[in-house]
Image (tube, rainbow over all chains, first blue to last red; front, side, top):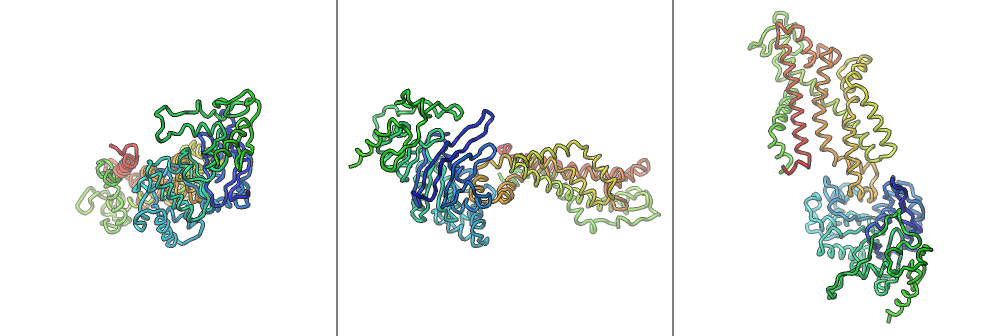
Length: 333
Length: 276
């Protein structure tokens, strides 16, 4: 499949005083035009670094993209010059960050900040851009856009600010929106509103969405494809319905099992023992081996690669591949 | 409380601000305020004491001291603002580049700052003035290019921390050029400490100019400056105390005013002290 964005064997590492830490180690995936993909995993598994690598916003030093390709619309973003890359950022690919409180510049009006992208990418005049900013605020359903456009970020609530961030990101009609935990800092009712808004806007504009989250409920509700990352690798990839119905990789199963269930038995939630190992102390063989309930002696010997298992699904655990595909077919009528 | 209200409730800052405002008024309207032409001399009225005609007396060649003091305030203000303006421009530019780009740019600029700081500034100024003409413009430039290092370090530190803030990364993520990110998003958020440093810097520059003029290598007579009025005064201290005391007091009060205003602004603009 030739998608809008195709990441091939991406490798990003950080040079620290303790040595090299490979935060993203050979990640590959494809995002189709207009689709929505979720990137899930625990904190520190490389989700954000993957997103920042696609945008080429990795701080260097200490971070370096060491290998791979990021094909976007037929061009390898990693081989673009700085100026060419700037023309992509905000214009073709836009990004929303986690903290709406700190992602807006406190000394500029929100109107200026939305208009700025348009002035840079579309070379609109001050006035046109300002009017476009008002329309963008209307699009993200902020009441009284004509008045709100001249307010400063501190005058808005968290949910409103995240709407403004979305307006900024969407102002130039990007074809891909990367949202890095866009709702983590918001309270639950606002979270739902923001996600619904993003969903509606995606349908309206036909952009593709890469949603980084650790909220599996959000994934189930809003995404078509899911990528599960663990310790810098994609360990499972597939359609959300398939993966959630029959998770194949032990890590995915662990993640899904640790979700609270409505009408649950009141027992303690299941957890995955241990933590993501530090990147400079990964176990030999399978990286998940130490925490895996079905680990065998063989797991220490070889580093499992992603392999096809089932329809359109890939997974990096040889033990469970067959069982997973089996379960997937069973779960379908 | 707004910044303005906090500033008003800070009594020292307020008195500093009043002094500064008064001085600016005097300097601006010098031609209307001065009772005499500052260069006009009258051999019949040499070294006269305080009187109704000459509220601050006259100097060695019969010029009105009050008028000279009033015109001298223009020099002080001009030197203060222009030289600190030059220093701030250099310091902010280099500091922003160093803080934003880090790496080799940072290393080169900051080592240059270190080198500049090893020079005893005043003697560097003396040496440069010895080669150049001691015009007021040269003095302002020389004070400016020897006093930007503090601002540079300040701005660098601000940008180092600002560049990690999400809105800076978000601006980059929207495709803004480094120049735009620095000018539009970085520097406006770093201005508070620069502003304080500017006000305090003016006090320093006024002192330096006075010192240079006092030593006779600053503003050249007959242009009146507080420093060279003071020089003339020191020779006649026993017979005409007002000739030394007036410019001395003027320098003292001015520098004190700027320092109080600067310190007050620092308290007011520092977010950590806001809750008080």
